[in-house]
Amino acid sequence: MAQEINVQTDRWQRLRAAMPVAQKWIYLDHAGVAPISAPARDAVLEWADETTFDGASNWSKWDRGVQQARRTAATMVGSSADEIALVKNTTAGICVVAEGFPWREGDNIVVPANEFPSNLYPWMILEERGVETRRVPVDGGRLDVDRMAAACDERTRIVSASWISYSSGWRNDVATLAQMAHDKGALFFLDAIQGLGIFPLDVEETGIDFLAADGHKWLLGPEGAGVLYVRREHLDLLATTGVGWNSVVHAREFGKIDLDLKPNVERFEGGTQNQVGFLGLGASLDLLVSLDIAAIAERILEITEFTCEKLREAGAEIACSREPGRASGIVSFTLPGVEVEGARNRMLAEGIVLSERGGRLRVSPHAYNTEEEMERVVETLQRGT
Figure 1 (tube, rainbow, N blue to C red):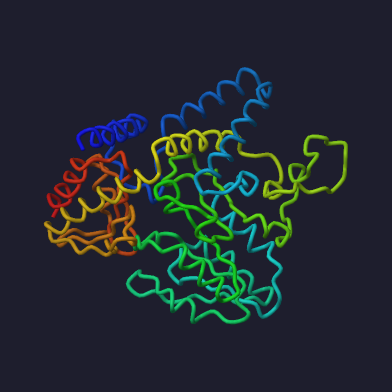
Figure 2 (cartoon, rainbow, N blue to C red; figure 1 turned 90 degrees about the vertical axis):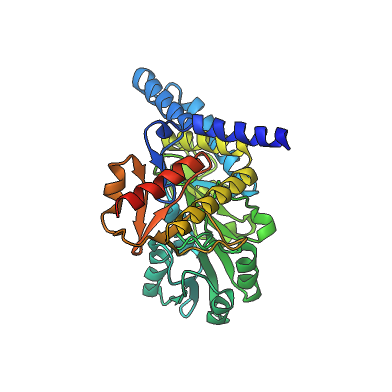
């Protein structure tokens, strides 16, 4: 037992050492925009130095790094690398499916009403093509799968939902949602941005058809670098939008004009990539995978539960579920006597970064945060009452 504790302690010390932000801030907004890791910073700075002094002479090296990021992302979600596209953000990934799907007038999409806008607008705009977006009400932040199922009919083509609600922190049972969609004759799209990298996921086992996530939250990468997963069997179902020189098999033979699309999800990458962003993202992905995602999940649930206990002792009302299988890295709450509006700025002055969402305070600690930090947060909030 002592040896196991030491292993875990060493793991989190290693992660904390890789997060320079911890030297200055108690950073608790990983569900918003997270600080990048030291490996990500190093990758970005190395690229910056090389392109500054050597131009594009190291392009092949950078491309190898980008391909490694693709492979690590595939490992993280349990797919093959040729099912992963590197995209600029979650919205871009959703739009690949929303804009490329073979819709017919009268089709519909079913989605929870409390989704982040990225998982609503790309579907809602399809109204122009006669496709309905059915927004299913969510009570108390808790998604009811039966209610989602009742909204489906024979014209439902896609069910889309977040793995974890950005506002309530409710964690969905992905496999149950996917099975429900399939039972209704639909495909399932997962917005994974609030869970990827901190909870284990296997797209094969869970039956996910499509997935998108940006790297600037729990993945500790730069903004503008994310991933899209498309199950291999659905590749030719989607029209290839945003076609560019990088979409074809002979991508680097610029004088050869032959629309021979790549036989994998890379066909959706179009043109020149955000190489520096993907190099940074890949470095953070490697770090997280090396630490064991299952262990990260256990640690995050441990520290958020500790936080909830301290908040309850202070009289807080916890808005997020702490049920097994539903709890996440997001804790939303209100505290008697503490005004939510402006709380972020007040806490910044104390060296603490949190956020405000839906009339509540929200903390989202990562595995490198500590119990001592969480105690200080609660004490600081109370002191401001």
